[in-house]
Length: 336
Image 1 (cartoon, rainbow, N blue to C red):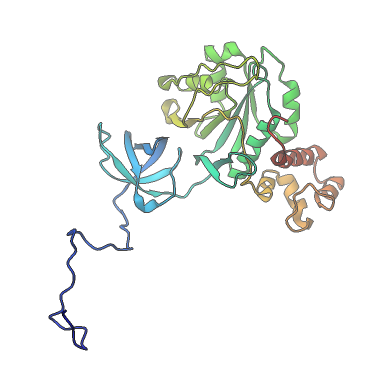
Image 2 (cartoon, rainbow, N blue to C red):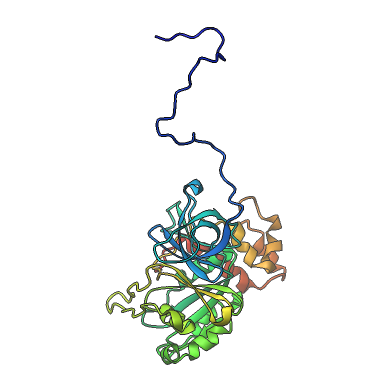
């Protein structure tokens, strides 16, 4: 057995060779300063379709990103083959800081949040006035997610030929949310798309809605070059639609004047991740009144300072009612 002397720096000590012949591991990661910028258009089973300049590039996430996932709307940095040719694959090495996020959880008891869309400016909540019946609690939950994530909401009410919109609009009048009302004929002849398009210019808008409300039909009319399967059948017994969109997809509007992101139909919208202190930011007329609230105030308890603030005439009572209705929806089931 070979034994060495007291001097550990002896020249005759041999280091064990690397049997694989590769370089030793290091914690120093490359900076990828030559990486190109791109935008994630869709994600499918670990493969991400990205727009790089004017090319569509297929990519995968680099191992050094760990569990951090890229979602539709993310701005990313890519290296590798960026030609966009068939059977080529690039690598996403950085996910840039997000300006906004639309998040949801499976239910209110699920601590694991899922980012649905990143960097959207606006959330278009598409709801049918009948067939299927509107679900105000689901609308409320989408509004809370929009306010929490930094997106401006837009209500799109479809099938007005089956039911009037006034009763539903009355619920949201105090919130001053812009809205568009359409009927079934307008969904197919393009008039609905023309009126919705007026709210989309220069913005990235994510479309969400219950299955069967005509969301993807509307998206198809907005971006006719990129039609998606959109024939949703509404179950006559449950009143619920069948999912026809299975993955989120970002589509450019005519003349690069904005982006439309179609998302899968939702049947629930968990809000476990929502912090009430962020929702209040969407109510600037009430925000100052929270300065005297007790610590960790839910804004719906006996000693909440907002009651006195409104009683003194600083804000409309309907606004406080709307805020509390939105915050309380986290404690209710969507179908209530």
